[in-house]
Image 1 (cartoon, rainbow, N blue to C red):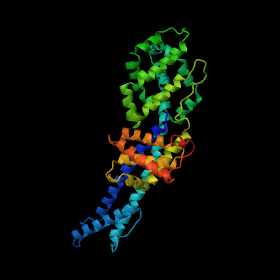
Image 2: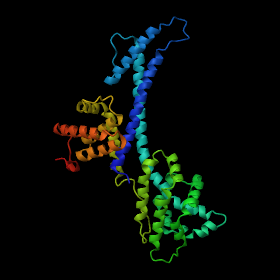
Image 3: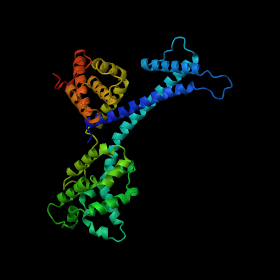
Image 4: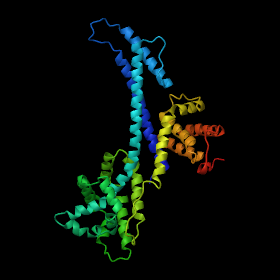
Amino acid sequence: MLNRRILRSKALQCLYAFYKSKEANYNLALDYIRDRFLPDLTSMEPIDKSELNLKKRDSIKTFELNFKHDSFIKLQDSEEDIEVAAHDAYIDYEKQNEEDYKRYRRNMLQDVERIFELYLWILMIPEELIRIMENDPSGKLRIKNKRLIENPIIALLRNNNIFQKGIIDYKLSWTKETDLLYNWFKNSVNQDEDYESYIKEKKEKKDNFATDKKLILHLYKNLLFKNDAFQEFMASDDLNWNADRHIIRSMIGKTFKNVEAEDTNIELAVLSNNWEEDRSFFEKLFEISVSKDKEFDKLIAEKSKNWDIERMAIMDKIILKMAIGEMIYFPNIPIKVTINEYIELSKNFSTPKSKKFVNGILDVLSEELMEQGIVKKSGRGLIDNK
């Protein structure tokens, strides 16, 4: 299941990608200006390369001034072609950043919501195994694995309307991956001692349902999620698999652990206990970190005078901006919680020295922002803030 720590880490990764794209857009803008002042080799007129180089230099200077002040400023006595080139580059730079922002924000949400889709897709696997067995022309698979085919937990999934609707809505199918599942069954499941014991056991045992449930959990936990071929396939199908597989595995485990023999339905796991609230937190955190970028840069620079803000690790800057945004714009989250969460992110995503640096900056900033009334906590946010 998703939690706020996972959402923070995903927002951090998207912000990192966005800021790297801004760097690329900046360099493309400079390349655009350089290209505007290349010699025209088709011209019959004499080419003054030194003049072109001066214009290129002044146009780049104009662009950099615009970039610094977030508005278009004409250099004194600059020629029109110098100004036009800088202006066009600046407008294109801003336009590309806006497009990238929308794309990363959209992809960020889609990547999270795809976790539930993958969860449903992987829940389909036992039923797909049964389909493979029932389609075996020799009938041997069907006979040998009769107990799995009749497993009541698989039947509960088969009869779950929400699950079946999800399969239809997401257009989920393992048809193209039949060979993958068959090879997993043949080389892993069919060779497993616990599975062999299960299908040979008599069904009259009193703890029959518990055994059925234990087998399904074993198939997922010990045989599927530890299978190299399956992991490689999922990683190639979904770029976020390595980060998300633990969430999906947990959701699947919860789905089966909660089911009881008397149940007529199986309750599917949810992506979050309150996805609407978590989604709002996720989106707002991303939006604030981008929209308040230069404002937060200034706050960080004031508290890190021994560090050059431009040379600071980009991941540290993003972590600090996210933390500042969370402290100011999420009054119901305690400051200590915010600081601890972003220290953890720095340990996982940045340099070995980042933990101490992030902790020091946030400690000082949080106290000053509270004193200035910029950070105002309420409700749950008041916990541990004394």
